[in-house]
Every structure is written in C-alpha cells, then in structure tokens.
Amino acid sequence: VFEGTSGIDAKKTTCEFTGDILRTPVSEDML
Image 1: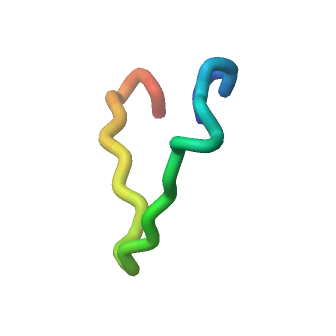
Image 2: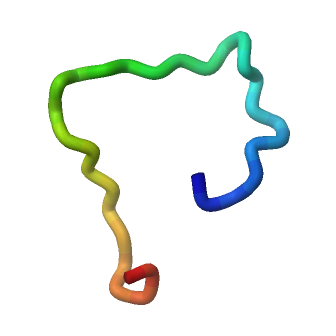
Image 3: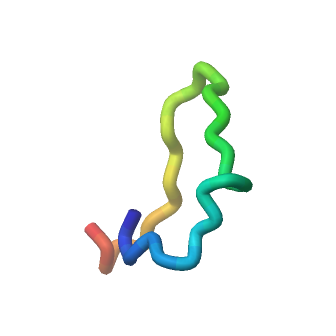
C-alpha cells in the first residue's frame, strides 16, 4: 500500500492467492 487505506470497504475487499508471484508494474522513478 503506497497510500492510506481510508475509504477501503473491509467487508467487500477480497484477496485471492493464485500461487503466482506478485507482479507490480513500476516506473523507473519509483525505483
């Protein structure tokens, strides 16, 4: 999480484990 979590509905938020690695596209500026 790069920002705050306010406003996220915890009751409707899901997390799915697919068995794959986490892939997050980032720009060179973020690195």
